[in-house]
Amino acid sequence: MDIQYWDKETECLPRKDLEAHQLQALKKIVDQSFKTEFYSKRLKDAGINSGDDIKTLQCIRRIPFTTKHDLRSAFPYGMLAVPKSDVVRLHASSGTTGIPTTIYLTKKDIEAWASYMARCIYATGCTRDDVFQNMITYGLFTGGLGFHYGAEKVGMMVIPSGSGNTARQFKLMQDFETTVVHSTPSFLLHVESKMREEGVKRGSLKLKRAFAGAEPYSEDTRKRIEALLDIDVFNSYGLSEMNGPGVAFECQHKNGLHIWEDGYIAEIIDPDTLEPLPDGEKGELVITILCREASPILRYRTRDITSFYTEPCSCGRTHRRLHRITGRSDDMLIVNGVNLFPSQIEEVIMNMKEVGNNYLIVVEKEGALDRLTVKTEVNADNFMDDSRPMNALKERIARTLQVSISINPRVELHENGSLPVSEGKAVRVIDKRPKDV
Ligand code: AMP
Ligand code: ZN
Image (cartoon, rainbow, N blue to C red; front, side, top):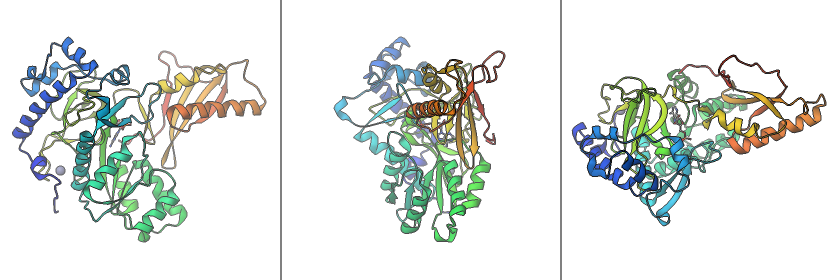
């Protein structure tokens, strides 16, 4: 296999040099963090007064963790480290509601992000001769523009098709001879079943590769997509707090995701004790971003559960590999690639006077896609046998939820007291999706 590197010197940097770079970059980002209202207090409280207090990479442990809650509490500009006039773009976490977790980028940040993305894309074997159809949501979500800029940097022809509308996706693939697509794994499976349904012949497409991410999926699912579509599928991991995609990606060997350690310091901790775990043990991924000036974020608790490979990859890259994400250490759900906390649903429905006290969130597969159903009880005073007012209420709940969670849920109304009540801790979520990760 011919290995191609976007930036061979950096991608194959000896570990000693990589760690020396990390230490310098960590000192720098700590200094940069002091320019934010949030970190200047947080770091001082932890006894850190400047980057010079970080003497070795192990000193990172003196820095307190940052959580999603911290990002929200600092909204909108408490974590901004540059003058607002230097910011050229903002992004937010998918499906966020109420107070979003927002990150800001300068021109230099966008350039750095695009370079990491280009590195990922190139590592899979793509070149400027490829035609790339970006079948993912554009907008505040980072998956759209993140891949877009990276693919342009590689020199590919980019088709910013966005997500959904399979008929149009097929037409674009055929008209422009798309060779690479990016999407969630569930949308790729959906595309395949639509292909069969609409009689689109595989031979009419030039597809070779797909990048799939934004939600957890198993090795079996990867193999299934690869067999059904006759393509290579590469796992793409990222989160908006750390720019978005471009954090970790599989190389041509498709065996674990290289996390770009010149741009990110990754640690695995025990989510209960918060102590660091030895290499190879499974725990929560904590990341410090080194490659951003506008929004420095130190020791961010991603809540994603994974572990490091202990042996180096045969591609020659020295940046360590992560196992695919197997779950989360919090209750966040990912529905068709969109993040969702059960509390977001609760906030919306409990604000509606017709809604009773009990509700249940059900997530299941409908074909290849995820389907979210919200079952709520209706107060005795508002529950009627007449279906018209009940349907109107159902629609209103669905619409209000959609605005808030960016997912179109199915809503079921139930008579007061009819939903199951669990003894002890309430069970609010039933996730019926196959657990094959
Ligand atoms: P967002 O901030 O909206 O981009 O969502 C980021 C979250 O999506 C991550 O923290 C993960 O929980 C999830 N995610 C992204 N990529 C993957 C992937 N390849 N495998 C599993 N989960 C992923
Ligand atoms: Zn590799």
